Length: 125
Image (cartoon, rainbow, N blue to C red; front, top):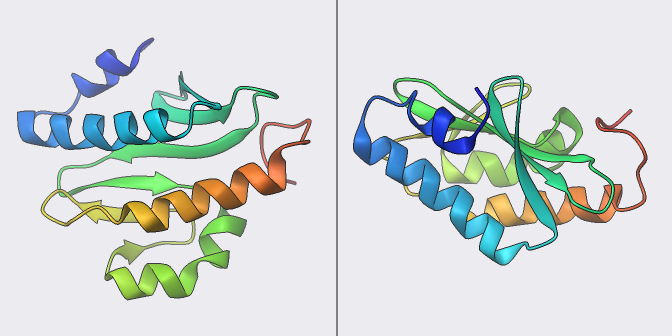
């Protein structure tokens, strides 16, 4: 898998494909300092300046998931709980039928950009 379109083609339902595409398109418009790359067969948003990881996406039949790194996920745990999204140690699962809370996603992106703007590694240590 080399491109975002390749990834989208792995999502069976056209409306699910469109929903995830819309989410990522919104983020890329609002955050021109980020770039989208496919790594480990999933779309990842990286900071253009230094290539550090900001946010990843994955998909499953009942949901798509975002992964901001465990530190950031834990930092926003109370906000995640308020949304009603199901969360694991590493992922926030957004059912295809749920409304996307862009404010929460943007807070996580802002936190990671602020924390990692001068970072030299891909992952947080």
